[in-house]
Image 1 (spheres, one colour):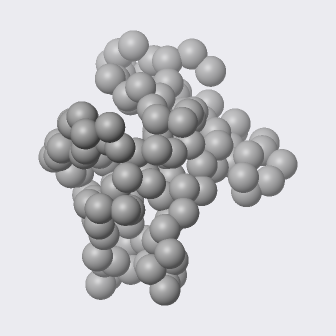
Image 2 (cartoon, one colour):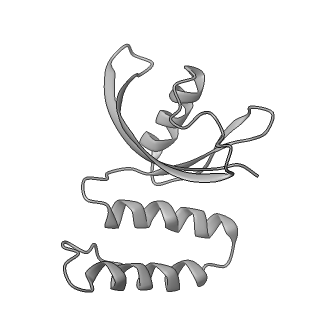
Length: 123
């Protein structure tokens, strides 16, 4: 799928229609999650890396899908530091949030600023 440079007119609707068909065509949950991450990079301006982090009921954190090692490592560092956006499960069972940027130190002591858009859903 090619990135949609501008969402004027029907551009966004067309992009979502293509994405919807693509996601429905996937043969497994894992393939679908992988494609969601790939679509994020393709469709969100400035997005270079994407991942889906899952917080399980007993507090275990898992990266369910990621476009690359940067997303996986970022998730792990955030979990290790308890610096995960939308860490508290929502009371209304599902809500979207847009998070500001926040500094995340890497294992070498350098700091990277991450920006996140989150969708939190509690089972």
